[in-house]
Image (cartoon, rainbow over all chains, first blue to last red; front, side, top):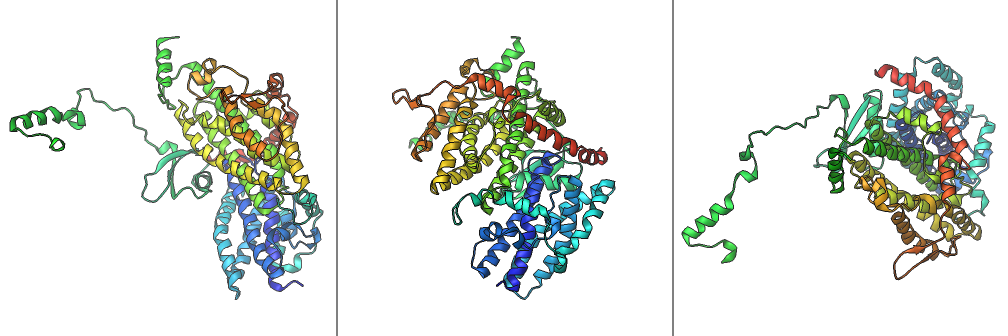
Length: 197
Length: 95
Length: 300
């Protein structure tokens, strides 16, 4: 049985994990080299945040962070559709980055105010790293704000951003999550559960 | 635009030239310098400067051999040897 | 050779350092730029075989380590292309030449990665071969390149650790996992033996003559074998060369002569994955051209 804390942790952790996985797809093929390096750090931070959140949830649930990240079935993940989408265009990626950071900032503020000291502490740590993500998103937003393809991408993705803050809006997954999960777990599933990699 | 990056490895040390990055403005330059020269926590601090702001100076003229500014302008060894001989003393390490 | 050129040659051969705005013989500049450009291309193309596995890494730790490794390689490409640019060839031109097939990159990046075993073997053995070459550049006569090599070698040391960790974990795991490693070692041995290039004597190698690199091809290969064959054998793995052995008297390794025709064929753009990878680069560049336009527009 999932507790409210574990549920909440999984929701955020799954968002960060899947978003981080998507963002990491740009490593090596971003628009230019300096941005490639910078954006890869953001992706790694997101995975790092997911890991820290999973570790906390794993203690509540009697499992491991890797177990939570990889060994659930696709429909057991609690991420929002926004992060599941494969967005191989830079304007969509930056639009998502901007919308997600905006919503996540609010989410983290709520968590920092939590009565649960572990949760509040972890949220504060994550938030200190997210400051840089928000700066990066803002920097790109300011540069691309005048580009029609960027504003179109923002309009397209904005409806999906509501689910970041509102659990009611998380109404299932896109087929892209299952595809991602297949790829993500293909090596891990090739050996029995509990194999060390 | 090209920006030169100077790194301070530890507090108290001099900032040393570490390399250069390409960025359209100061905000991007800061981000990219941070990442290229600090993502492993290898730098205490960075100075990021537009290449065009750097004044490169390397043409130093000394036509008249100003040796009073250099160690070789002060040939003490011979003079000290002479002075000791006159006083009948030896160098401290020979005693 | 002209007097000025001869003086320059003596200068670099006795350890003299050259900076960007110093006078250089045309031959030195041309060879230097081509060599460094190929290095940049190799770092950039080296990203592609490993990228796929970032998405398939079987633990969070491996995912992070592998992403960081590939990120480092992109960072190295950035450092290297900046050096080439300061020598007179803009980055965009280098990328154009790479994508059109005009410019070359190292053989190993033309081959497929088929399993997680490849991920381990690349970080363990391919990177090891590369580090040997890179260490021979730390004293490059062209100072800006020598300086970035220091950072590059430092970052590569983490990659080797990661590779070793992946391999040892697999070797201590299931039979299947050990099988992955052996299969990858067997498949990568040919390209690894070709990596350091055909046996030009060091004193006939212009790169060594001009002190761009401090080690000839054969010496680099011997160093690789000396360092890594014992590591391979001590894990119970085999290498697909029955002639491979160390002559204890001379200290030199004997081996079946690598296939130099294959090397030439591959680096001139006919490797199994060459076309596909260049195509990926081309498409990525085309799709993001607008981003570079927008960013440069206000910068001028």
